[in-house]
Length: 384
Ligand code: PHB
Image (cartoon, rainbow, N blue to C red; front, side):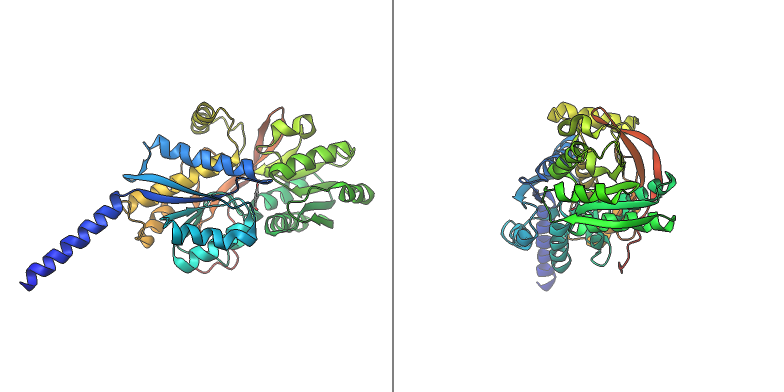
């Protein structure tokens, strides 16, 4: 009798677990649908969906169901938004977001609840630094990475005195810090650090200050709608001809239609270029353009790769997201076949990747070369 009961209980558990693994996998997409980063959110979602579609709508045998929240790139609303996805919608996996401040709130909740989190953009150094966790992964970059690579490039160009300008929040601060670390190590000096609150675009007074400082060059982090306006204002102020402008590649990614000739010639560093011309990237660009009638950008790639990373982890655990250690082990040893070029993740779960030097020509960020080969974020403060 007792044996029969045990067998029955075991059978019930097995059925429940099989059901959980064949039921739809709920993915909570927390991305900006409004504001200066709205287009970035769309590209990430497009990229994510493209990969899932290429897999027949399923990852590891589980159909994917999306639950969406517009996070508005507002850190003040972030904790409520992420809690709703976890508690009300019962998502199995969180995917988000663009803004570093919002992403840090997501990482805190993910760490506290053990929910699987894939970050498809936000570079907040802390996410793969002090906040790193076995259940948190990033398919994009750390803010330090493109900044550090550009610090070396600008020093090699022979510039000595640089002014920086950005939004005053984690991404801007950390991008400038990465730049400054490499630039000053190579003998340059950052003579002034200018900033304005996110997502402000009143650049005039700051551009006047740049003109008065007469630096050899300017380094900047802006993205999305703000980047469009900054590049146009920089040119309109007459600075483009006199003081070379360098940036983390977000300055000119997904923005070139709107920036037009004002962006032409700009040099930036990023883990993607529109002209890699590899079979992998060409196939991705063609599929993306066909599906969405749009050219892909770095955000589309990061969304696509977040879905790939989820697929790799899920395959290893046969769709059972509760097997966190096995999920993590599979992603940690994987080479992700990204359109940007294959990459693996560091122990802190951040991509170790080539950072390209690109130059704007027409509507493309053309490839100039590799600025920094297999660059790994230092993951300061990560204990895992
Ligand atoms: C960020 O907040 O981390 C961020 C936002 C937009 C970008 C890159 C980084 O394009």
